Image (cartoon, rainbow, N blue to C red; front, side, top):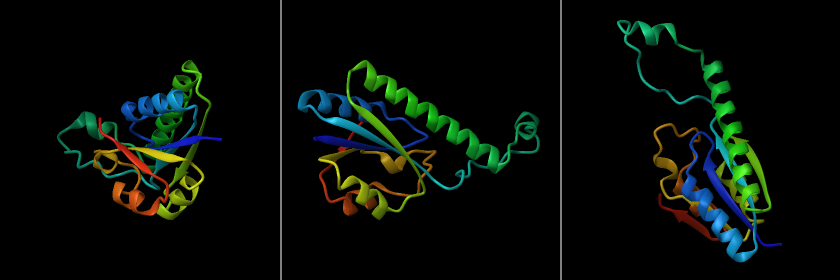
Length: 148
């Protein structure tokens, strides 16, 4: 069976990558799998000044922040599934926390090609420590970076 894998940082959802996966699936009769990645911990977002009472009152623990991240990722996964269903594209998704480049490459080797955001590692809230370079060097099937 012909299959496409797209890889996204689970917190952000680059729609141009999803749209390209749908387009290629429709053109070539591919099924699609989505790999949503998440880091082990919440990235630091800066310092809340004590004079900013609103920010001080709304501080959350790292555990709460990670739980919120997971909710966002689950929502994004459901959104993509709905988009694929609307276009009648066979689809499944996966969710990995802090995988190594080798683990991702092993999974990707079962696909015909991989689609990834060309700005994968340039996002402000990147939740995974993998870089685009790590992935393109490790994955043995063709990797297609998509510019947004």
